[in-house]
Amino acid sequence: MYRNKLGEAELLFLQEVWGPAFQYNYEGLRAEYPLKDFKGGQRFADFVYIHNGIKLLLEIDGFTTHARNISPGDFDDHLTRQNDLILSGWLVLRFTAHQVEKNASVCQRQIKQAIGHWWSLTHATLSTKDSDIWTFRRQYVVHLAFRNKGLVTPSQVSTAFDISKVSSIHWLKRFSEEGLFTPVGPTTRVRTYMLVQYKSGEL
Image (cartoon, rainbow, N blue to C red; front, side, top):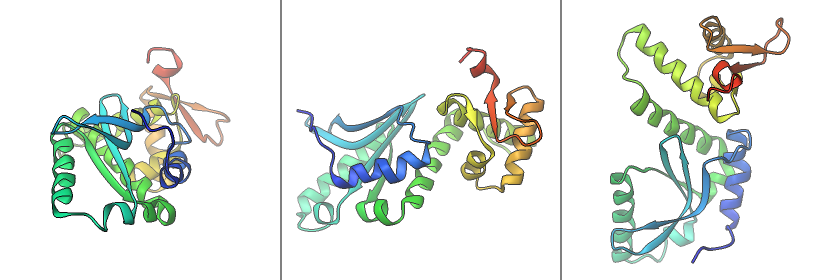
């Protein structure tokens, strides 16, 4: 039976981690998600993010429930379950309640890195060639825009790739020159770019 209420740590995760990281867009994020374990029983994941082929599982661990008073058998079962999830194609991230409360930015960075890692594995074959590197960058920026109703900002690109805002502006200008994006707003100071295919209704 589905549990009806989220705990304090899970609610804080939505408010302080996921919300600010993804402009409060919760599309694809599901709470208290039921999963069959390796013994055929049903368990619940705190959150899963399923979108465009991504399978990201997120657990928020309280110290008292996960790190104390656990038997060796339960600990074995706990790790076996996690290994089975990974082998089934899930990307698994675990955060402590303390991290969610005190280090939300670290949680945000690792979630974005996990999504970027999935994207690089499934949508781009990278090499040292400049054209391949730009293909990956282009595809991931498209992914960022697609998740945000076709819009992307230099700040979002800067955060996703850990580059300067100046560099992110140059990237978006290049993508605009290639016809992938179109600037939104005053031409003298563009703050947002719209994915052309999204604007035209092709996506």
